[in-house]
Length: 435
Figure (cartoon, rainbow, N blue to C red):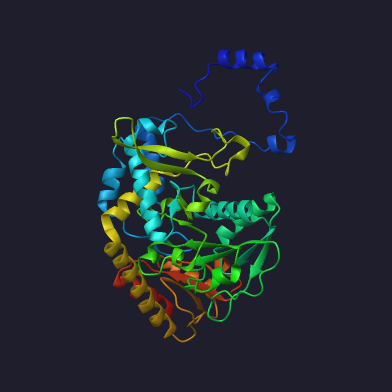
């Protein structure tokens, strides 16, 4: 059977109903220069066995690389319990039920997820997740504008360049100007005067260069302007939470919390804020209550989206949350606990610093910034493109020069380390750099 199960008679009946002669006429609105380049896939009819053999042969051609790339996605160890529970049939869907009240299990873990995110970030309320860290950050800017007003947002040059692209796209459509905030020789942002009409200042913690930002005193300087902090959640195992520094909104990419790299997706957007801004926050919120008989239960407390009664007053056009990824994060955090997360963070930090020290000891190599870093750092050298290619040939992937160049650093590459990287892998990277 073809993927589209309509018979020829079905197709002709539908075409007659909408008043067109054939399928070609249906697509007349697509420019001819585009349609003429269309080439049918021409997939041959194969049995299940033959398809499996073909795909396994293709997969065998993949190279296994040791990932030191970072840039928002990190190769942390995922305990077996995460897959064991998340793959149960009761949970195994990426979509949250519309009639969620019939699924108390779903609402319960969503409530637990929100609670853990609040504890992790030091904030008062959190939603039940968003698409990914980049869209969560962009939605935070729009939320700040709804509350503060204004027409510009302060964005550090050290912000993850991929997240920056998403923020700029959102801001372009919303009529919000993006103002660069430079960084100094330490890699930390240097905030000057806050322009009139500023919506918010974005701070990434640690930033895209891997440097740990100093959040103290920032909110006091901003006043009514929002402080939006985009976090690497594992780093919060050892860093003071942004809520302690007066952050108005905390967002982040939750992939490191029990979700695999999976070629870059699906991902998980963390979003938390102050209680007084609850109704301005996008997304869904699960709440705990009691029924008419006094029994404890969970309900979907807020669904501030356009499909529901909010309509034009919706706070976001994001239609759902990353439910399965958020469930994995919930299991991961519950399994590790505060001490376990701290141990993961410390192992990542210590291994990264050991590697950075070894690389800085190689002639021709030096760290690009003097500021404190967590598990990611930028390395300067005479021929970074050649170095990255040499590492790749040896089965090691690092952050390429074009990534850090988008943050204003030339002649460099980046390295990210997690608790999964073994002593042998670290030594191998150093040996390849030494030639």
